[in-house]
Image 1 (tube, rainbow, N blue to C red):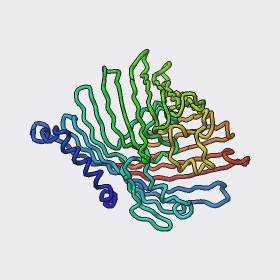
Image 2: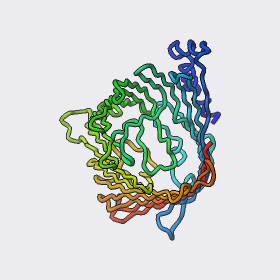
Image 3: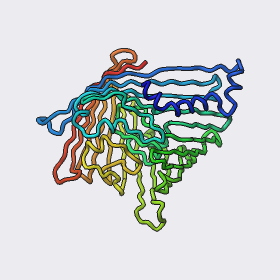
Image 4: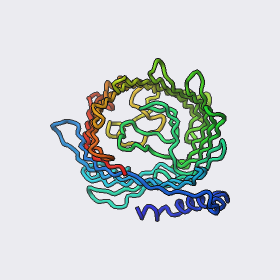
Amino acid sequence: MRYVFWHNRKFILTLMVFIYQGWGEIPKLMAQDSIPSTISLNGYISNMQSVLFERFQGDWISDNLIHNRLNLKWHTADNRWNAVVELRNRFISGESVKYIPGYADMIENDEGLFNLSRNLASGRSYLLNSRIDRAYVDFTYDKFALRIGRQRINWGQCMAWNPNDLFNTYSFFDFDYIEKPGSDAVRLQYYTSGTSSLEFAVKANVDKQLTTMAMYRFNRWGYDIQLLGGVLNDQDWVVGGGWSGSIEGASFYGELSYFHPQRSFADTTGVCMLSIGGAYVFKNSLSLGCEVLYNPGKGSSKASFNEFYLSNLSPKTLSFTTWNLLLQGSYPVTPLFNVSLSGIWFPGIKGYYIGPSLSYSLAENLDISLIAQSFGGKLATDQVEYHHLGFIRLKWNW
């Protein structure tokens, strides 16, 4: 972790200078005893054992992950100024590091403008990685809010597939990364009323390509509605929108985005992605949900489930096939014990995903989970391919 901060000292120092200078405002605030500031630190640590295999009778790949997260936050008493630095440290040991080509480089890879990920130590079958995924300062005044730095910009409305999540796409299958990735961006919000707002954001990636988007969000007919448009990675024009509301007590939500190459308006390779879903919670706390993704461009060209599982996604590579159907449910058997099950049908490859999980609270802030993930289908050959994973995780939040 020390090496990560030293290697990125220019970025960290720049952020600190911005925090303490704040266009001349923060020194004034700090000089006023009437506006004190607060610093907080929290996080979690988990130990997760995993196995991966294609056939039960075949070879198994076994790994262990020790995952630690640190969240450092500073804010003034009036919450006008806030600064955040959050990082995740992962010690991975086992056969993935040993046998998967380029695994260490893939873990270290950072898609942001600033490279804030480092493998601090590595060997034939282990590596220690530290990554800063939040590092920002924000300022709010009256109806305005400005945030600068590495942050998460979440415009998605759906559970599994988010065509509106144009800044930091995440994988539905990555259950161990609940915070989800961030972007090196500038975000400006203006609240036009209590139920509506205008938002502008620009992000730069590792290739110095810009994603520039604007969004208007409002409430009508009992629904939160958003309309957005802009440019994705200096390559595609994007227009889209989303909604969330309810029908007879069941939540109903969706989002769509149309991507069109910038090179020509006459280009016919534009793609419109649509995701629609709903969920209902019964009186006994049983929760059921359904979601459908239509992706005519398919997007993903990965040759295997493992390659798709480990790769970085983009808004245009959310799925294997044109149609994707998700069903999922969860039920608290007791206040301490929860079970859940999710399944996805990929008709284009005659494939499936099944993901059961069990979670039990051993003590306050201490949980144990059993999770399985199973994939099957015809991706790149006429033969059915399988990809099965199992996890047991012990997690302590502090």
